[in-house]
Amino acid sequence: MSDKKTIWFPAKETGIGWAKPTVWQGWFVQVSYLLSLVLISYTVDPKVELLSWSLWAALSTIVLIVIYYLKGEAPNWKLKPIEKEKRKFK
Image (cartoon, rainbow, N blue to C red; front, top):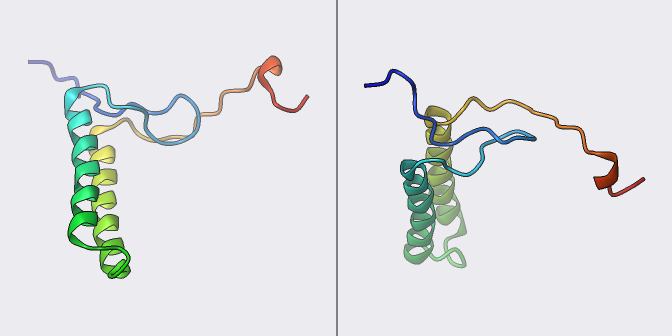
């Protein structure tokens, strides 16, 4: 067995946050989150019960972010300079 921690969500190369999952467990978490939002939207109509729908969606999002923190790289701000040729404004 390896003592190395498996990273499910690597840090983004620029900016703050996480990139695409690198292992199947990360993809499972992503798909589960999307399915939970679909299930919430199916069971609680946001046109009728917006507050209830918002609370359930926020709870699902908080659970997703907690999993990111536990199974992903530490989020930190990374700033990569933009090459002069790729800038929009010169």
